[in-house]
Length: 300
Image (cartoon, rainbow, N blue to C red):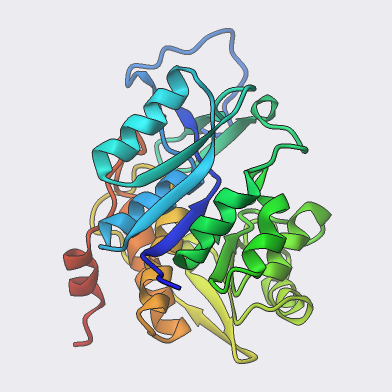
């Protein structure tokens, strides 16, 4: 079978409204004046992973449900502009959307509108089968309706990855994703013992690699039963926005991992791409390119 797609990104298409606030948590007030503006732009987790992978030269296809609405038009336009192949399944409930509050130090608070998807949403099985069968790798977001596609994906012959984001290690919704993937990403934000959760993922599923990102503290990598801790990369410019940093990390890690780099070195690629993303306002859809990534990861 021909594998003409390097990475199929499943789910995670939508729009965010970005609001730069004076601080987080935001003290209660009747109103705030936002001098920097309030902007709605295309780009949720699947969009940003697809963008990051494309910027690194991989052949990417994105599959998700989109509404016939202005938000869906923004997502379609982003993919067309960046040259990312997109298969959009009609979503009567509308395109997924969120509001991100961003503080001056780059921290964010995300508010997700869960009314744009339903537990019984399905991607057409024939479409998933065809695209996964043509892909070397599939990155599965934890948005609906991706959970229903996991059995088909496991039979496709492609390797799988997923990002559990700020999972607390307990919510059962995340378990099927964690157990199905060969590479599992998650944030250490809500974990009191990242290593324990990472080992539990590896023990219960088929993950070869589990990566927990820890922001300014770097990242943990579990592979071959060995835990490695990597320091955070130094951002190349002032930090302005942490939106999309985890997605940039995942994209760069997958680029390196699919190029047969070791898990630890793949995570180095990820830390550099994640640090770069923190220097780019999330209103700008700009990912690190391959030339810059390779320059920064070159062995002295």
